[in-house]
Amino acid sequence: MQFENAMDALTSIGVSVFAFTACYLLVFRVSSRSIPTPPGPTAFPIIGNILSHPLRNPWLIFTEWKAIFGDIMHLHGVRQSIIVLNSKKVMDDLLDKRGAMYSNRPRNTIVEMMGMDRGMSMLQYNDTWRLQRKLSKTALSSDAVKDYQDIQARVAAQMCISFLTDPTHFRDHIRLAAGRIIVSITYGLPVADAQDELITEIEKIVAMLSQAAMPGAFLADFFPIFKHTPDWVPFISFRKKAQEIRAVVERLGRMPFYQVLDEMAAGTTRTSFTHKLLANRSSEDDETQYNEAVMWSAGSLYGAGGETTYTSILVFLIGMMQNPAAQKKAQDELETVIGPERMPTLEDQAQLPYIDAVLKEVMRWRPAFPLGIPRRVDKDDEYAGYCIPSDSIIFPNVWAVAMDVPSGTTYPAAEFAPERFLEDEPPIDPGLYAFGFGRRICPGKLLAENSIFLLATSILYSCTVSSPFTVDENGRKCPAETVEFSTTGLVSNPLPFKCCIEPRSPARSDVIKQTASK
Image (cartoon, rainbow, N blue to C red; front, top):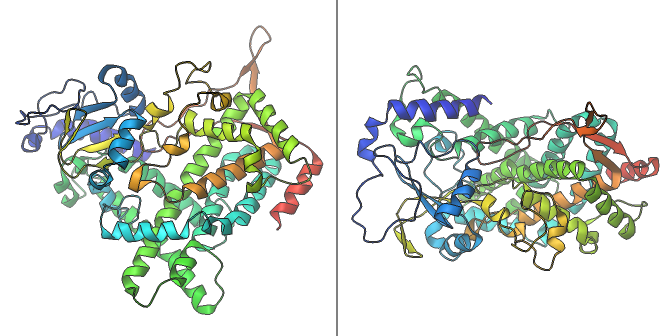
């Protein structure tokens, strides 16, 4: 929350204080181009669209503007243009088919100061990124992820035990499960509980990165010179904070990596992403360069790998507790296909079409990254008769795609309705946009999908969730609260909410304990 408040303060106050200094960086200027930029809201001299650019829920505003400006629109920033893509077709055309031009990240001073630009997620599109990408694709291939299925199933069962013994802290249990899976897979290391440093520190880092990676969130994004300003200058406190975060990023990137190296030297290594890549290094590889690439590839997977899983399972709980009929239908399907004698496995997935629809709806209804992760175009480009200026920041508005349901559907876009994916004309599969596009698509996509499936189906197998209720003056039961979501940053997480969790049967609890101990 402190980071979020700092973002608002530095954006609103800092920009107004230094607006006139920005004249030399003016993006809103008379252009000599003969081709117009895409349409967008009216901009003002010097400050461009800063006053109309939403700080909260920008994906909602951009989606509303789609009805006015169309599938591609242009906003004037202080230093560069912002291009918002509002349809899957435009995203595919630019981010995939023209990936050589659209695969860079915006230059972000704060991200660099925090040392978060070394991992694959935020790296620029260069040879270092290509090496990390190559390594990650090798270690997370469809064959490679099969080695991790037992870990995922065991952690899912452990989470369900925690649900049943301590239902009040379900959010901590989900965070721990997502963290355990990703730490075990990335480094082969055990995680004792939700207070383990490998869980708590990375949660803070991801939250900070979510805020900092939004272009323009801090004054230094507009004026990079401020990264050299003394800490006592007003509104420059972010510099000290960034230095503190950098130290944590450095420690969490190197500590588990060198622990794997030590275990390999002692012959006690467990199977993991890092171990596989280090073991596969050839004599032709430069050891220092290769190890650095492995270390920051692992750090990127570890840092971001659990966030989609964590958010998706929270959204799954909300969807189930607010839609008991859908939950019952999913449990009945699980009962028919699997029965009570064992917990679900990935081999059951193809026989569970309704649950597949539920999980697709989870990712459509509340996407974890509603604006994706921004890109940057390398040079002037032309698309659909419009000029996309060089160095523009590109936002794929994932929310707009998620809410773009077929016109003939009986299910409104805002409703949680898994049945929409069983219709003759279903919406676009969220798996095609929730994990990125083109060359930047998440290499851990299959791993995350497997984790989400096993955690969600294990919950369905073990317990029933419901909303807390109050009784109104007429004696009618009403939901006790409305779930709200975070409104700033790259990640949109559900804010704290209450959920009632009840075990389905003692016999199932015994099966869960057996699975958790394997």
